[in-house]
Length: 151
Image (cartoon, rainbow, N blue to C red; front, side):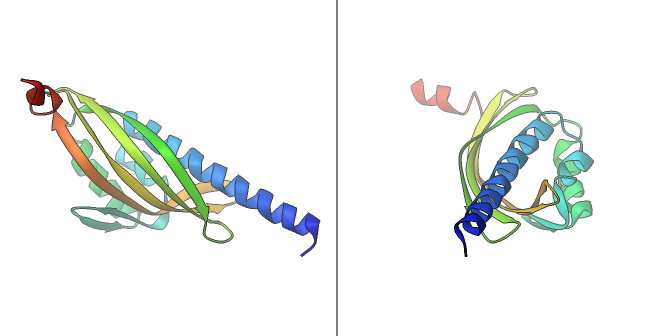
């Protein structure tokens, strides 16, 4: 491989990693004002969402998962994603690991955090989740959460 070919390969990997990183921002932004279809549109048609409750394969099943969680009585949340690490898994495929924090209000103020592990496909200048794993570490309201420990 020539120096120019090597450079072009490295630049392509960096562009894919940046598109994958931007997808995480789009995901958090979409969850802050969500519709199930908008969240599912961030996945490939054969994408998989893995959560403690199980796996949801395909955009229809993923939209159904979010429809169940975003329906009446769901709290308004804000999502924050940090400590993002990207690793190329080959042309058009990026593994992304990150941590998330969310805050919630009404009916009860709350907070939580955990990890995302994502396999992201990048094609035609667009990144979409091929497999997203959500591992919650904590979800609590403010009455049972940290303030209760200081009493």
